[in-house]
Structures are given as C-alpha cells and as structure tokens.
Image (cartoon, rainbow, N blue to C red):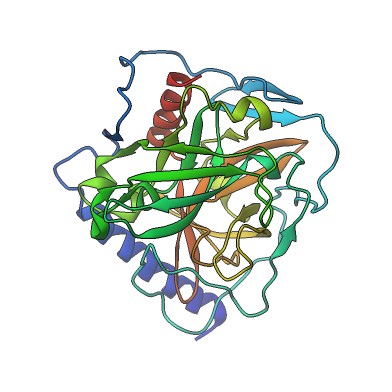
Length: 328
C-alpha cells in the first residue's frame, strides 16, 4: 500500500469516527446553547455580527464574516508562520486512527514546540492558562484564548466535565502567564456557555465553549484578543496554522507554540500533526496572514496519527460572536 493510500484509509477511519460522534446528537440541535454558573445571563439579542473592538495597543477590524483584533506593540519573540496553501503534501503511515478521546493528545516524533517567553506581546498575551476546579473538587488544566473583553474561547470539556459533576465550580483565567508570573493578573469565573451537542450528547464535534469573565475583570481590554474566521474547505486544506497553549508535560504555567499544515478537513473538524499534550485542550488554532490573525479551530483531541480540533463552521462562528457581543 502506498503512503497516499494509507493516508486515505486513515482519513476514512477518522471520518467514520466523526460520523459516530455526530450520531450522538441525533434528534437535537447540537449547537443549541446551554449555560452554567452563578451569573444571570442578559436577555438574548439579535445583533448583527460585530467588528472586533480595541484592546490595549490593538485595533479592531472586520472583513465579511471574519472579525479580528491586531496589536501595534513589538514583534513577538517566537515568529508565527504565515498561512499558505502552498505546502508539500504530507502523508502519514503507521498506526490506524484510534477512537478520539478528548483527554488524549500527542507529540509526533521530534517535539517541535517552542517556549513563548515574550507573553506580554500580542498575540501571546491573549492566550490563557486555565486552572479548573471541577464540581467534585478535582483540579484540571486547560488553555483558552480571549475573543472579546470578557469572553474566553475554550473546549466544552474544560467547562463541563461529564465524569466530574458537570459544570466547573470555578476556573481561574490567566492571560499571558509565564511560569509563576501573571503579567495581567487573573480572573476567577463560574459562568460559562456551551452547546447541547457537548453537555447532553458528549460529542467531540461540538466540544466548544466560552468562559464569561466578571464585569469588573475585562481582561480583553488590557491584552486585546484574536478574531474568528469561518473558512471554506479549500481555504483550510494545506493551510499552515499556529497553535499555542499550556501543555501539562512542560513546566507549570509556561506557554508553548507550534506550527504545521492542515492535513484533513471534514464538515466539523480540522486535523493536523501539531505537537500537543494534555493541558493544551481549548487552545486556539489560528491563521496568520498579512498581519491578521483569525482563530479557525479550537484544539480538542489527539490520536495515533492526527491531532484535531473543532472547526469554526458557521453555527459555531455565530454562537461565538453572539456570546462575545453579549459581554462587553
């Protein structure tokens, strides 16, 4: 069997697994909102999609359905890669695609991650270390990214843990954390939004959520935030993407970056061989092009051949923009 045939076989197994995940939400709208926590949410509004807003040293713009925030501060120590489809085709051989487990993440061969020490620079300061206290008192770690003044994008399994009592008791959010240093302080939250596809059906295809920060902790106004993009299949395939978060196999509180190509795209997911580890769940996968940064997926799973993420398709994009606009 050729490498190409092996890749296609593995992709077919991955898509079959995705179909099993989709079957879990049969009979419900997987993107229907669910909320948890102690804050009373505001009444729903039918706002138009809004542009990005200014953060400290950042300016917001809009481009169709894409929103983003940029920084005018100094260049980061780790250079992001420019997103481009002009990349060599990558093939994968070896073990078959395994059942996706939201707790399993993987480093492939040589560890290509680089530590980000300039976490006061944009966009690294928008990426957050999450320290989670579950409903049953257990502690966990995840990653997230600010997408608004009070809104932190992460995974559903970071805010709602089926095996640990449901909605998290508390999540401490520290943007730009670097070791023991929290240059922008932190905010504790117990108010979250996710969707029924995760909280009711536990489907990894719907494993996304936001943490809503308290009204007196608008950390995004200090650090800025990255934008969101709903990109087509053809825009995503072969795209060079960035990922940064807080993996549990590295020293506590340190942020690590990696870049690689998108290998496969389905109706709800994006697959790649970005090196990740437990704790990086909820971290942003973003495109950097012409100085603009858009989150195109939320990292959530690993396997023997691919790591993967929840693709920001139109319903996901709409929910995220609605939640972002509700808390300013």
